[in-house]
Image (cartoon, rainbow, N blue to C red; front, side):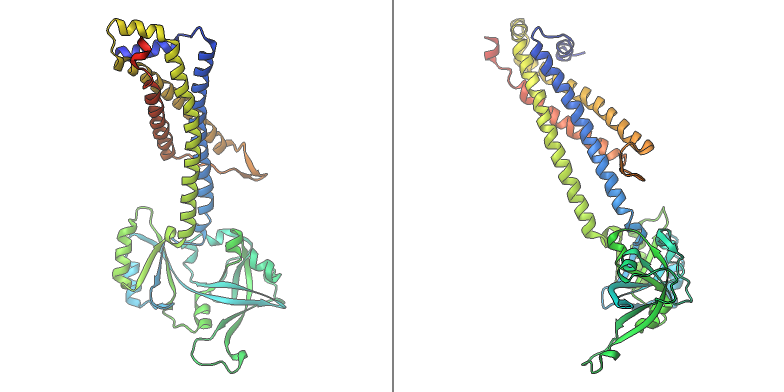
Length: 399
């Protein structure tokens, strides 16, 4: 054991005759404990909220989505389908036709995005698991699955044969429109199910069979707007991207779930950074107590330090004593604080003490990377605080 470490531990274990010094030291230790615990709890809480928010995207967005960079649709040939079927990293893929449409029922109307999907769509995303009422659509039918937002806007029920939904889409073509009644393709569809995800998505998408959407939109049998893909757990996304481009051509853009929700991911990352910086500022203010405690201990031990200096201990070694003392307090508070915080997070995950609603616990997520962030933050700030405080040891102290 080094001399500086030995003296630092002795100073920590021994109580000062000045109760104010002891009180300030205890406050510094408690501050490091609370700072470490609060930083980890806040990061875990935000990670839980982030995961809770992003889980909705997995219900409507695939792992990968292929769409044309030119125009709205592209042709998927039989040869390309055979090559896609031979890709070992793809679990499922679904052909999709998508377009903005106008919905009307009775005297009410709204805008939406219609997605014509094939029979594999339910294997690519878990949209059918969000059905609150009714059933998922049948492929050879005039059925439509809608969200609660659209259902409320049109005052619709499920399988209400007296209130079909009329879907309108502008006819493709050029030139002036002479007869407004001939400007739109329209079809009457019957809602078979109502899904519930969140307010935004519930009022955005309606689903029908792909063949029906192709006929309604005037597309060919092999013409689609998107190819939505579910990868196998062991798949390498970059390799699959290259394989898809080699099959479908360079005019096809491949996007993953993060790219499909680019603005949402950027917002969450910005919020995460802001929360971390805010909590770090609180920790910095807390660690000022540590620096103040070390300075007060230096003043309290002034006579002892003169003795050490006179028997040959260098000024640098005396500074190292108090620098080491600050590191010990930091590590002790960090370990205790992290232990408390991890316990709180695990208890919340298993027993749900804190509830948002009577049926929904506050989401928290235990992540090892958050432990690394807390450890690095506290140690770095503790090193800086200890170095600044130990720097107050100078030759005037020994005179």
